[in-house]
Length: 493
Ligand SMILES: Cc1cc2nc3c(=O)[nH]c(=O)nc-3n(C[C@H](O)[C@H](O)[C@H](O)COP(=O)(O)OP(=O)(O)OC[C@H]3O[C@@H](n4cnc5c(N)ncnc54)[C@H](O)[C@@H]3O)c2cc1C
Image (cartoon, rainbow, N blue to C red):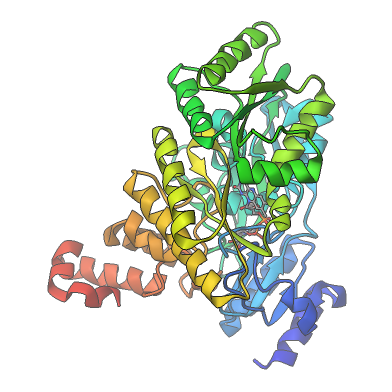
């Protein structure tokens, strides 16, 4: 099918205003927040209904055109980068709250709703959606589910996957399918579970049932300042070891603190080189005592100042500074690569030492802002991507952090997903048999590799080829290890 025929058909399906073809406008969709690899789509569509999505999916499938579902494009792993061109389907015009069912603590929403807008709507009714990525003012619930996103409050409330009850999706044949009708604890295969974190690789989500929780009765926020990041990281481990469960434990190192202080005029003293934001929530009674015990640990570890946010407005200000910290990085360098890995919390001080060493060895500044309570670190490598040498050193720094995180018993993503950024690291985290099992699920749902191809699985094989190989193995009656032994690496090339 030639390009102009495709565009005409798409315009007939979603209307003139729902199709973008201007080359300059297409550049907006050539990457998400991970700009190390970019690739513009051939065309962008902005549907307003599930029926339109079905029609677009059927058209793409009929002509073998890759199709990528995109929310706000704030992802940081290249998940929404259309590496093979084709159609990018943007959900921003599907942004309604369809139902709030308070008796069952759940809501049904369209995938393009902005997380923060959903939060505001729920807050007015005394509820919240617990998954709150720092990007919540821009990112969509569909993107949150597809990436299984985390956020500052996940230490207590869990990541997005803990708050999704069911998903309506459009599959490659155009069929519409609910993984669950919003009933908690449904027996049978957990098909919602495999959709969470699937990064748009086998469907387009069109509606979602999410859990909503009553707002806590009271909340306290304090910022503890330290002269170094290590005691801040040690405080986190000690707080958890003490049996406390704060609502958030977020660390910023000196570089991040300086950028945030310059942007938000927080009056941070020059000797402060790290901050730990501590939030506790729950019933009013006893909350101050709980906070006092946590503050005592911070002081014991060397906190030089503890600043309570005395009013709800001050709490909002502290969180605004933290959640906009990545934006403040623009003051420090033209580009940054934000690494997202997890280590056991006890290894946080060790990996922070490593990050300092890597910065020295690569000659690049690396600042840290992270969800310390989850052991989810975010070293932010600052560089200029127009400078080839700096880009190469930045790549090296990123790879070293990933390698070390695995060595410490961690994983390569806490919340940003795999996308293209980490696909080569998948075979270090999973065995070939693990990946082949995932590929078999992928093949069952997306047999022609229509949705977001070239993602998540290591580049050396196509997901569906891997699944076919697995099936041949099974049909031959040999175990995968036996076939591996026979064919060696060839199986995976
Ligand atoms: C400043 C900043 C701070 C951030 N902080 C956090 C944080 O605290 N925690 C965190 O987890 N992440 C964070 N992120 C990363 C990012 O915001 C999240 O991953 C977010 O969930 C992505 O949502 P999105 O709508 O932008 O999705 P996109 O970037 O548009 O897409 C992400 C993935 O979801 C898929 N997808 C989107 N919609 C659909 C759909 N309807 N059906 C099927 N697949 C779909 C896409 O194909 C892609 O693979 C941050 C990013 C920035 C820029």
